[in-house]
Image 1 (cartoon, rainbow, N blue to C red):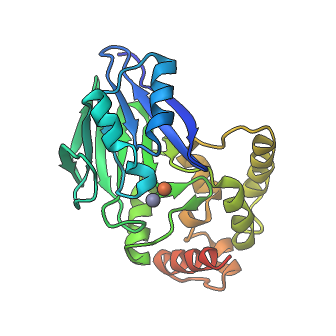
Image 2 (cartoon, rainbow, N blue to C red; image 1 turned 180 degrees about the vertical axis):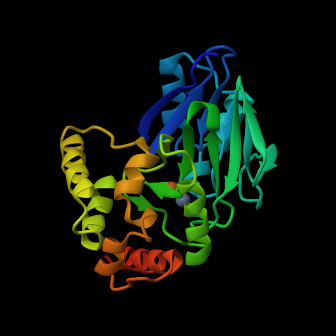
Length: 254
Ligand code: ZN
Ligand code: FE
């Protein structure tokens, strides 16, 4: 079986456009649709024809291009239950699978950022598209759900194999790094990663994708059971959900 090809490109001010392509069948999907024009240009550049849109949640910077792209290509739109996805053909949720070309994605519901948020895990390809659930060194702001819900959602991501490549929807990493070091100040892996991130951004390069292994070692939102981090936020021995909530609150006020 041929590999799943992924083409990532900047969209809007800080989103990433993501096209995935199966060379065996020619199928091409856009993971979310931050901007129809930018996505159309990327499709033309690759010589790919859009067959699917896979939405993660209803926010405008993830669905804004749905209708224009569907009108232009007749593509099939798959996304979460909840009713906010323009042009949706198929609504999916926890435990469902989505077939894309020769590949299969398993679906997890990850409420918190929004209530409808889902992520796509291509197990065989060791790749996950996580939208605004996890960012490099960060996680989505909790707009619609509770901190508890968001923690359960992050715990699902944390349980994936560490080698999983994580494609998140935004380039927020440098700002996330400045916060992360304030709650995890003695983490040497984090310090080393921040240097790499600064160099990448100075060179105008993306810090996405990341891997789960890297996030487990350095992302404070995935480390609420780390004793050093717990101490740094004054919650030694607290539950992961409590520590996560405190870290998220601090980030919101950072
Ligand atoms: Zn969002
Ligand atoms: Fe977003």
